Length: 193
Image (cartoon, rainbow, N blue to C red; front, side):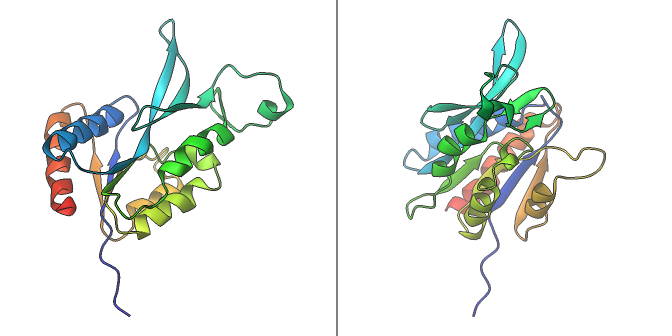
């Protein structure tokens, strides 16, 4: 049996707030302009702000459907009391799964997957990382954001992605954002051809 071709896995990491999500959005915008027929699946994670304060996060599909991911405001229902927490945020795993998991279903005509992000909140879903691994093993290109290591240690699932053959890790900083967008776009185009 022949070995599978190397994965086409592009991982963007960097400090919180450095612009990982913005970079992915800009790369996608450029891809769509240069290749309007590309079939792209996936989702973004977006902050929810009220009065200048971040109060939560939501999942946004590439066709603009949204669902809550995490919030500092939760109901006192028995269900939300059991939700896992990250800092002061309660993570609504069921809501996340309802929107994100269908976006990770592998379809024959999909050209590219976008996953923003493979992080602690998303990984509370026991179904999420297996879906990410299926995308990785499908050998379809994917572009994802991952958090920087905390105290020098990666989340085990993130380490597994970063160490996968064919994975390329791009570390974003405030000074390399424009160059990184061009580099990722160019390398993705080579994999999409």
